[in-house]
Amino acid sequence: MLSSQKTVWRFGALALAAVIAAACSSSTATLPPPTSEPSPTAIKVVVPDNSAEATASEGPRATSQANTVDQITADYTYKESLITPLAHLYGTFLDDFVIVTVDNANKTAVKVVVTSVINGYTDTATDTVTVDAGGSQEIRQNPRLMTTAIDGLNSEHQADLHVSVSYLDNGQPRTILDQTSQTLVTSRRDFPWGISGFTQQENFDLVVAMVTPTDTSVETLIRKAANYDPSGAMTSGYDSEKDANGTVFQRLADIWAAETTDFKLTYISTPITFASNSSQRIRLPGEVLDTNSGNCIELTLLYASVAEALGMQAAIIVIPGHAYIAIREDNKNDYYYFIETTMIGAATFTDAVKTGLSEWNDAADHVNASEADYGWVSIDDARAAGITPIPWR
Image (cartoon, rainbow, N blue to C red; front, side, top):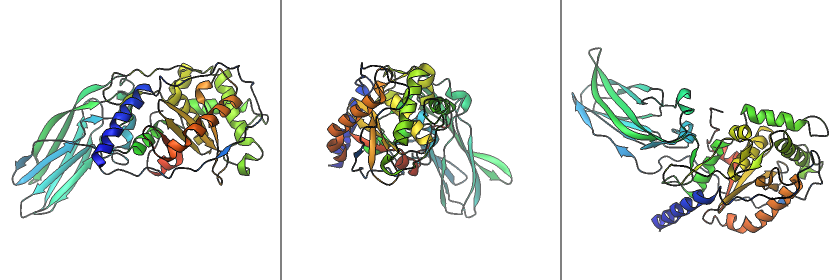
């Protein structure tokens, strides 16, 4: 039964990735006024209890050929692809990239040095361990992408993973294993909606890595948004129950005004990718601001980044072919504003909230039933599970 469910999910992930950007739609309503509007009533939500947990092992691994020297045997398993947007999560939320196993059949302990590197793309991970007499030890490594390599990863590349294992023989290093294996380094913009071995919710939660609240471009957006606030400033967090004084709604409207007037954002669908399987090309929030445009998931990630930076709790709503955002009114009650972000530049913020609420009313039962291609992605829950922001923006 489990395998058939996974088969259904893999098919669903392919369909989702194929249409999630293309199916986003935008309104043709009038441009928004720069500042405050009447606040629509937020809706109480039964929040799904589906937070992600760190996964010990996801999907199959490739295996190297074992080698033995002086009764010390070494081999390793590795991931056949390095998912660039999630590279910083290997060893935490994602399984370790390289796992080396060393067996020592000698009657004395040996000191072993293990290194791994993806040539031209990562730094070298190095560990020195002592393997007991007659013992076995597992060494887990995650060579990290070099900053200089990231900007050039606009498409996927075949690369060489080099792993070496040596031991000290009377103070001199002696090689046990020295092998090179093929791996794939994916594009920095290709997000995988269907990683083998992950549940639908775990796959959805991983997109939170692309929520970047500390990006300087996001900070610039917040600064410009303050110009549209009646107070001339921008506060953070929550200061009234159920947004009784309207400050949450006002801040969100300020962001909408800055996106429209200062950044001239508009909805543009750009789903193309040359990656295999269920990947989708997604730009980071800073890139959306740089190019003055975004598709549904990109515009949603931008709003989520702003909300997190301002200490507000947000959730990404995933439905077949589309995504939009929910932002909580306070930190005590499960009342949310829903925002249809693709209406940016073509509608008022109030209309975007009304449309988002209508979409949620249609999707709520499907989301709560965890149906295929429906999901509620809590930013806070994903962070608690170890899904941290991409570090290079």
